[in-house]
Image 1 (cartoon, rainbow, N blue to C red):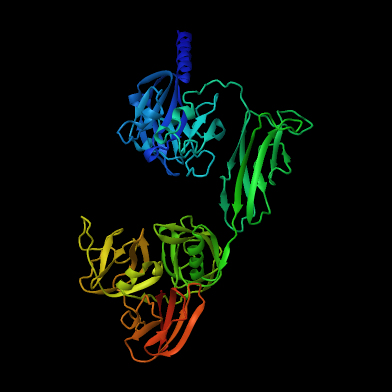
Image 2: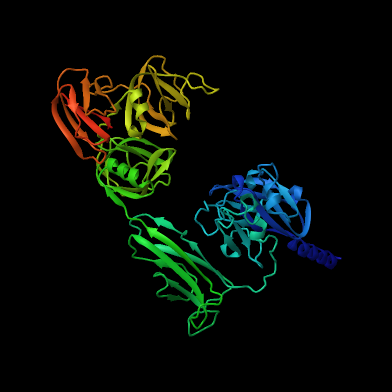
Length: 594
């Protein structure tokens, strides 16, 4: 009886082993809205899909969005298709037009299938959350070998479900659907992909090679001197040497565009050392034991570069270069920059130079230690690259290269009017400013209660002029406090959100130093000016000394004992920084010459 029971158990085990679904294709369509998005599964044996779910990881986040496959029912030895559809202008299904022969289909609006070409998915057994199969890794797939944006990937014949992603189990066709499909008067996606072709038994076991790192066209930060090239090989046994010939052959790689190749008798990473700034291409191929390239060739290549940092003396000079060449370049700021404000969220720091140009340091990866800089530090030697985020220029550190030249320096805001800020907010971006005698109104949120709440916009009003104050500093001491009913003075770092000017308040009831120029004490008009003259008016009597700088930080004009109008006819059209000094106290404003 025991033998019969054991035999029966073994039979059940053998039957169950073969009844498993497997991911065989994933595609990111190029029709309206990036549709249709399709996952192809193959039911090996009889599969009850009510036991399984698809789970997505978006842009390297956790695997969280899930979708149960109950509606597929029970399927035996056949393919099934789960998809997010789109509609033609006439309201017809895009999936039906692009995959006309697909059967066992399931349409869904679930976020689990609303993937982009850089998202990973899993096939999960619901009973114990075990991972049956997986496509992609828990990372942003942009630039990786498995990216499938406007394209697709297909599982190689003979490969099996795997709870971890095996890159050599797949063939990738990134961007292959771009501009194609019936939706764009091209070949339908089904014919391009050739769906439903996976075979559980391999027909030949061809050798395969794939470079898995670095990502193609990756840019490394300046001062990188070593790069590791990782690759994977399947269906190919590497000989221990050319003379031993105890395998299928060996590996060769080239770093000079194929002019010369280096023999390699293992599948360990290739370490490239003593590298300088510049562009590089690595080519890897498989050869037989005679050193001849396989027929057909089995090869892959990857290109990358090591950036060279452009040296600039100031933030002003950096911004001028970005204005000319766009974002994305690396810079070393050799001159001093004053830290005006810091915030623990994404390791943010605001800095500005003496010609009063500011920039936000955005250090999400904590390249610089979170406690390294505090307000009042004077820092030089910062190295990083620029990005634009919602209209704000950010400086992302690539290495911890800054030097604190001095600490405890006074951080003095520029006192400007709301009108000046609203008219020229981009000129004040990321600078430390102050508004005097302004009214802060409550937000228009439903839960507004007369107190300052985090992540909320509050109108800041001065006469008929208005801007927005964003409570972006969640640890600010005014959070939870009542909004002042009387006019007040606020200090803030200047910003914007996609063209809408706003400030991030550091204090909503500030007391400014007595020796500050206030907005009413120092005025430039007309501003902008086009007649070659600008009037300088101060509330206190007495002449002033004036220094005018261009946006490269170079002095363009100097005038002493100015009392009234200043001749600026020698200045070319552009934006300038006007430094006015009276009675030993200085203040700076921007001037636009047309």
